[in-house]
Length: 394
Picture 1: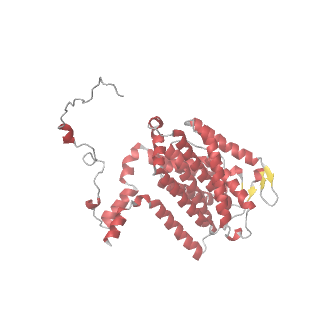
Picture 2: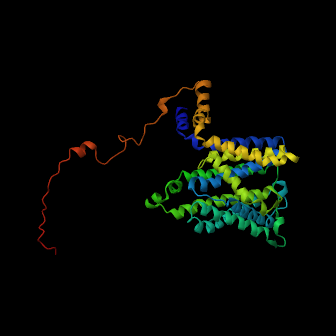
Picture 3: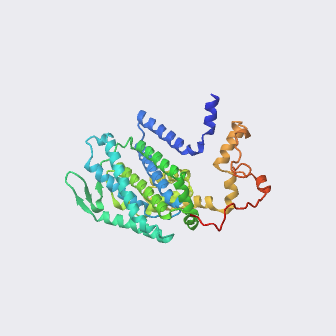
């Protein structure tokens, strides 16, 4: 038991907090929907929350970790939605309405991710040579071009799909009572991909480019390669979210994936903290819930107040997170301090210094080839060469 406990203590649990939290929440709601049917409003809310989490975490890879401003995320999602919708219409199963078309869903998700990733490569290859506002304008233009083309596209294939321009494309909807379970699986997949990428050597190269591109290039990092890698992976994950969106709705319209949708996803990333996966998850959940509650609560003449109240809430959150005058309050009253207070005051858990590790990078612990005292006591001896420099080699 002691060995097992020591092994548990050595695990870096902070790396698994997101998986544990998402898994517990998903398991609870899955059991609830399998035992007692959840209300339709709850299942739709869970679908929207999981969709926005996938979008926020995937965009955080570009905006937060790569340090590039992209406003075309909704465009990649739109491509994935239409690509996945076309595949689902062609290969749809007769029992997909009963929730048994999981094979069709997987194939559609793969195709949607591949197509969105290809467009991400084609856009990113020239666009990532730009910086700042110029890159934002190019990605914004890409999203608007995709939306405009699909809104004016009229294409029908017999025994297949039917794209009706502004009316969108009819797609088969997955079982509305269990689709959010797949949404939680997609959230775990997205978090797994992004977190493991960032903690790898490739992720360190990406963050080095964000911190100082010139220094990263001087140290031998292939800047173009890693920029494209982050951009393509982010676009592919947005394509997966688009496929998920197409299976959550009976009709996919290109007008949904407009500039405002990209801005809303960007807001989730910024409010959650740049380069913070956990923050993106919490922010996407909170913003989706607030927006849904405002839509359901403010009806009739009060509906015009929804956007005003929503904007005020976002402004208050931004001020709280960034105002210098509130820095003392943020440091004194935060989640980490609350957990420490519960551990020490409520649970009476004392701080055990025996579990603390020494600094392995300390100067007296770094292994060297030559000891310092050997360097100080080195005697230099002149050794005469035994070879005759005048003698020619034969």
